[in-house]
Length: 327
Image (cartoon, rainbow, N blue to C red):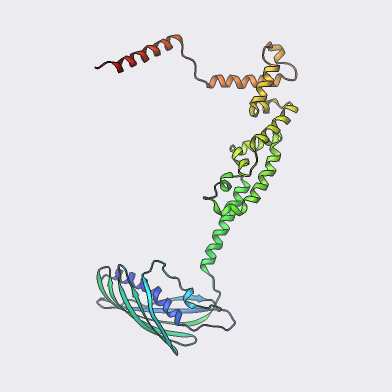
């Protein structure tokens, strides 16, 4: 077996050893700071050309822990389980079995005191298609105090902080997708009330032409923005168009109120000569509406000439005939 394979096996069983070790450690009920433990493990494997060096690490355990075993990280996909665990005085014996691809079995013992422990475990079986015979000796001692930090809770807190930052950014930037797609942005549901409070305020400003222009420049999907919070976009636009007409804001009417623009242009611009249409209070409306209609005409494809139409008709007829011929 190669050195790398042995290192992988040692890493696999180190977690299991630590779990067993912490189960056998004494529970501490005294008040005070959390406990810093130094843990040393040394692995010996039959057939290895050289001894593997001992590994030492430190771990902080909370002073008020109820179960040391619950504090040890475990691989949820591990196929190893404890078959028996018996304690008599300061000595604990145990047996464990690992199934699956690397089927193994092991047994061992631990002796403990208030501030130290030591033990060993012997494992036999197969790993990566090769027989193994491995012994691991381990020991631990309390070396001082520390401040325990629950890594799991810290990760959850960091994720919650990130989610809150993302949701508040969605509020600041008025991003409707963050609050309309409940499946993708589930974390933002608690912030939707705050989001809609801001949207409601914005919708009130949009009922005035200037407020409407300002919002649409920043948010082209303004209809989705409003409907996400149950606000009818057309009602907001109708109110703004009404104020635009009262203020004779003809550019706004032409840009955002096409029905009103067409009706006004028909009444005040159509059928009038250039001089009368370009003077008076409706002159800006006529100019603006005229420009918009000219742009619409320019954007439309030009109608084919008589020659082009005749040519297209002949080509279409020839193609139909070809489909009828057997060759």
